[in-house]
Length: 277
Image (cartoon, rainbow, N blue to C red):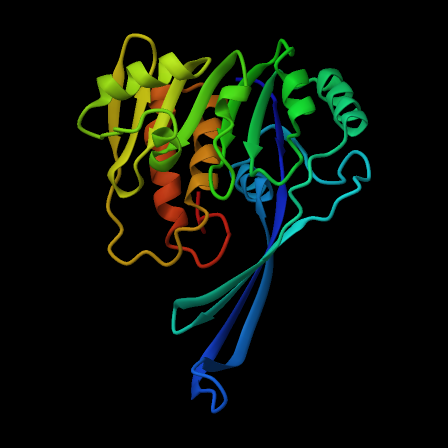
């Protein structure tokens, strides 16, 4: 695999940690004393940070990196006490970028010397319907990871995909009876619903299953006894997969390495890449 062009929404992650003081006298709510606060770049920017750690050959297109967009960057503020998340406050702007902005971004994508487009769609408006429509006309190889959280699945909007990554929840949007133990039914359903040559479905602690038109192969992951933070595992998986594909591994071979990189990521606090390569 040659140079990668990574496209996706940047998210600002703020994590505030505190010490429990007790409960409020006015209302039955916890009161914590602020101890530390960290601000990191998440979403597609976390894939980018993993790519940098893994020394990939890539470039990154995100909010305001090419043109100034008329939208704010989504911020997610998490409050922690004694390793338990108490509250999360999101400041989201999911408004799609305009058609004109989409066309300007696509012009750059087409001019790029990268022949692989890696899409990390966090559904905050950067990958607008118009930009998706334009990307579908590209002759570059496309690798897709699109999140299903507060928005309905949109994988079906993408066409001519080389490789689609889904977690178990995302796969269930297209194949309701998803099962680690019945990969053939899962494969049949995905190929019926989505326009992709290859698939990887991630099953968290179990590992992942790789599918092409002829095979389905399980890749089990090593267990982590006391995971610290699982929030960035999917981003680490995508980055690890593409890093090893760029080194010459097949998708199937790279899936095992991606499992391991994601496993290491859950041993790190916050939205951060693993500590070692």
